Image (cartoon, chains in turn green, brown):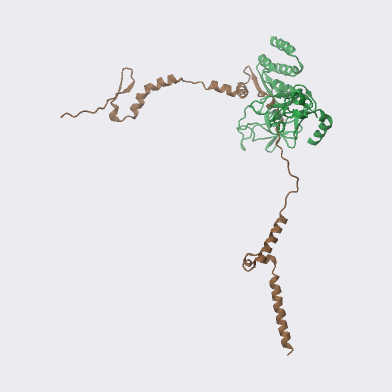
Length: 275
Length: 176
């Protein structure tokens, strides 16, 4: 799979690889090649003239760069695999020039190791549950991967239950595997999500937007009613409030706020607060 | 008359055959440990060489081009968790589910763990208070460890505190 991508990049964007630094927060397309700051000198078409001469021109400094979702490493090159805006974050702990990723808009979920998702139990077979997480394949979940579960003491999980869990195995060649405990064996909020409530699907981008620290929407929503909410990185959101009416209002507000401006949101929340 | 030379010839051929047989000991036999003693150095060397040849011929290796191991400075990571500092996915507001609310604080505070830690190290009892408290205990505990004979030396003062009376032992000059 890497081969065709590499060839496509060569024929399509090989001669006009852009420096990652210059296209930050701009739209990038699949197949495009990006140049990291360390590769710019000499190779980059625009970079050669502007940059000051370096003493160690021959030896390339070894700075570690993390390429996040939407980017792929191909040998020494960095290729774009998703359409969206290129984002960058400086490295926190020093050393390394940070993280690059593509902020894309998509609805289809691809399991990623470490993601917290909401799944629906679809089958019980022997010692594993099959959980639908919205990926191409149902994930497997061992009955031992719950807090306090032993061979004798099975967790009470029925078909149709909602599970909040974490991926431990997720790659393109294997069946994804979920667990409902962390590395210390504690649940930490994972496991079967309680009764009632409403589950609905939104785009993956909206979930990330809502989960971002200092998200205004969530702070406003929290002021409306007493409520409980669970976000899965697979685009599923589960809400529960005191009454069905409130639950429905919340679900509609959350769904709608994806394409609203800050002013429009303010209006809606003030109107809801009055009623 | 005729029989004699024939017999001699027969014996001679017999000897020759024995000599031939001697040289025709199989290599495998010669390689055996108990045969090593009688071997002369030349055959020994020959055998060793042959053995080496066999080993090197049988030694097999992967017919692959040399791997060019390049240390890459780009790391792939497909999770958004690392890129965006996302909050923990379970939330509860206005006391709907107190358990989750507690958990939420705990999980979301992980990023700011270092700042929080300094605050939590706040002392329950100040050092001065501690010292004042233990000041009064010196006597009580001292009494516990004192011998019965010395216990009389501890006496209670007007506050009810027990303090040791230090009977200073001095050198008494003997009278003459």
